[in-house]
Image (tube, rainbow, N blue to C red; front, side, top):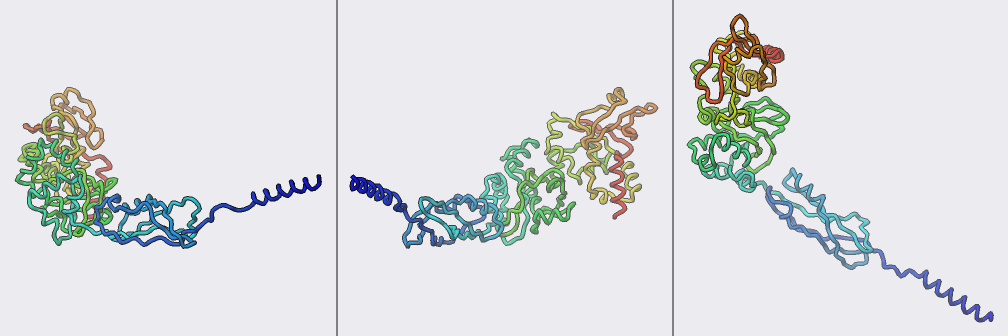
Length: 413
């Protein structure tokens, strides 16, 4: 009996020893990964076009090889944010089974990113397809491929579509414009200007290749000529820098031709000059606040030449200095009201208040039989304004804040 009991105990002991035996696979460490060949691409090569491997054969600590998966998620971000011509991308090894990566190895690849010409930059980005057609149509392709150092403010397709809509054009009639080369040249500066450099000197005027100046101000980002925003800047090329913009820039003389004569300039020379110099009419048209087909109307309270002369005499300015005043657009917008208001109707409705496009309330009153707006007298109405009314007044309408800013500006000249 005892012998039997000992035999059973020995059997259980043997089974227990067998259960304690370590039959699990050996854990192996990754010792090395292969070296990938350098990849040469250009600036506009998509990340997916790099054709990076998603698995790789690695050498293990026992000298054998195994295949592991590779993740490039962080590398995609690094590539998209690359600011140099060479970037090293790192793929993360995905471990499976009984592998470890004690050395923290990654699969690295060097990417050489070659800059392309401005013309190639236009061609390679689909949002500039209309711009590309226009550049080819006027024979500027070789210029944008040449050994120049340029800044190109490049309207995207949405900008051109808006331009066609507000001026009653289609792409074919636009490409056939006699002034097309001048319009495109107006988007080019013959030096390289990054957005950071421009912001450091705003407000800033730059002379375009066309010959007219473009103005740049800092209004929650760079604003060009009061109506075009830089939506994606600093796309570097081999011969300059490209800034994508959301409106077509129009030289002042061509803008006047496109929009037509708004009023008889012989009556309002100074006001007309300031309007043309400020791009205000173009900004109102491109922003949709007024339309050339008359569906949206505008009333301008236009200071007479005498009123402007009194203003520049008071502040000791010239007309050119007044045009250079940073808030000149806001002053002009304070003389504009959406809607067509006849003088006779305003007389009957007085006292009343109108809101200027600048956002200020304009008080309309009748004093001793004379129609007044913010203390300025109505002198006459200009006939033939195609999109509303123009009333000549005998003073420039300034808010207290505008007057203080103008005084400070004049004192600093």
